[in-house]
Image (cartoon, rainbow, N blue to C red; front, side, top):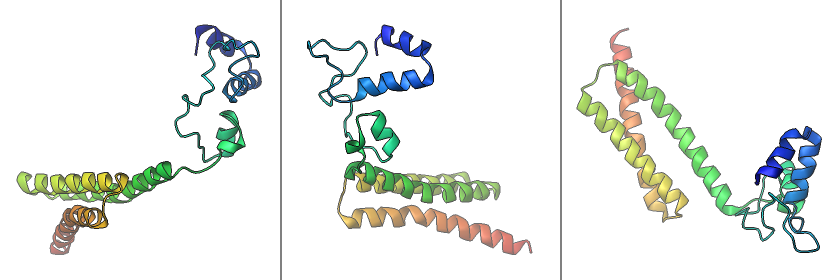
Length: 162
């Protein structure tokens, strides 16, 4: 955005600012009838918005209209990969923290953490790159082995102290 538009938007109230943005971001409104660009508006060739897809209607309205309220397969795949990572990484962090308090040998602990990291990196890469199924499932299983190992060692230590 140019400095003039930023200054005007900073002075405008919230409703006025939304109207200015809505005017700029509707395709076809960044150029007047005389083919002069509106200062600070993105070009209306779509280059300012890569996927032109929004999951929420309010975001789509702000950036062009309800026709942009749709899902994009690439975005959905990234969201699924992120959700899958979070479902695996948070339990690993908890197990790793408790496991670290048990005082394992540093090389063994480092090996657990490295195997998990490599397995998750390969799994995420395979998920986003749409690689063949065996790669993803093998890397997932490989990343779960350290988690199972740490969980068993934690349970063993807990049972030993009962």
